[in-house]
Length: 116
Image (cartoon, rainbow, N blue to C red; front, side, top):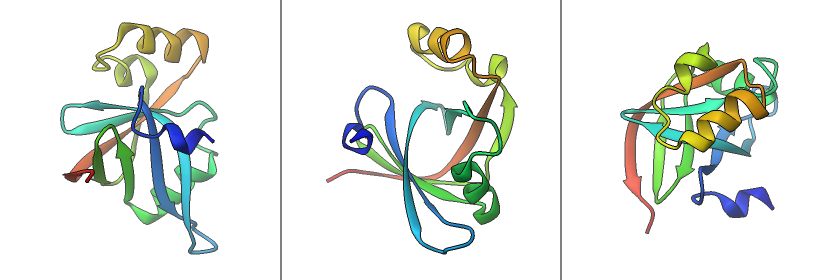
């Protein structure tokens, strides 16, 4: 159900490859484009399966807004730093104080193309 919201209101579809199965997986996440990067709150910490998968693969894909993004290797930053560039103040507040996110994942955008 959440994947149907991908592309709307900061909901994104993160596509990654399972590190053990090799299967393509889709995970709904809240993501924000900040310049030439994408920021995702790491609400459940670095033990999240999707984070382990993209770390091992070194890349992933994402449907965010009206774009498909090819993403590079993830980097963990403290939430105070990761949320600085998020344009929506309510989302910054919710991520840091309501969801109590301690860390964010910053993913460099390697390539983007519009959704047709």
